[in-house]
Length: 310
Image: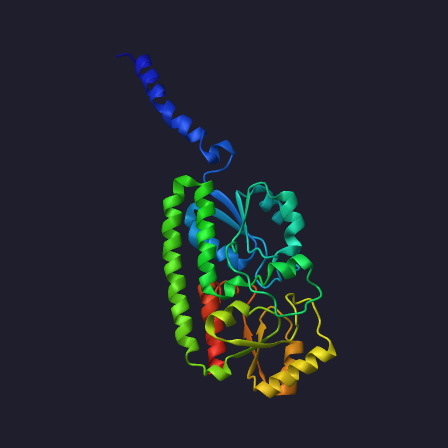
């Protein structure tokens, strides 16, 4: 057999492989080998990373310590949105400020990880919220790890659909991380059991603990800012009512996000004898902190709550 014939046989044998490669979803859409993913918040991003593993490049839009209700995307964020194969958001109007950028720039798939979660209603008369946001309910679904299991399912399904060749890897990652979330839930139940039922009362800087309270038997008895967003401001009447509530119910602590100016909470604490306790609610902690992953974030918060209330 001469060399020319051998070469033609080799070329023909490669045709089926070439056709399959060119007709895959990634090839047809011009995607690179590794998926390009965008996540709105550090918390969403960490969960996406657990499921996607090393099969994707991930950009997180809203930096650590920033308020997702008010974040304004930068030029590099707009570029990342336009190049992404999948954009993952929390949903339930958490990223309301991002809507114009999402509507104008997302060319890939947009996935709300909280889809399928039964949203809690807001226990607040926040006048800054629009009718749609009130109707959507409380977006802070991540404060219960059982909800994050639903996130994981949504993320794995979206990745498998866009990248079926790696679907088994995504499923394995999802199952492994789900097991960690179930372990976390059991650990929280054990820790919370140290707090007498009558002491399970939460006052926080704004409305973030609804899902946590429902899952673990707490009562939300007050908000320093009776709103979803940290931008709202309480009236003098609101503060007076809160302080009376704290005194009458013997509330021990006010839980304040590290990223929020604590001055108002400290004033209420000084007036009532309560203690200000710092926690993470809207984003993970800085890299290297105890709260730089979702699992660490929840363990840190629960430990802080149990320590002051037990």
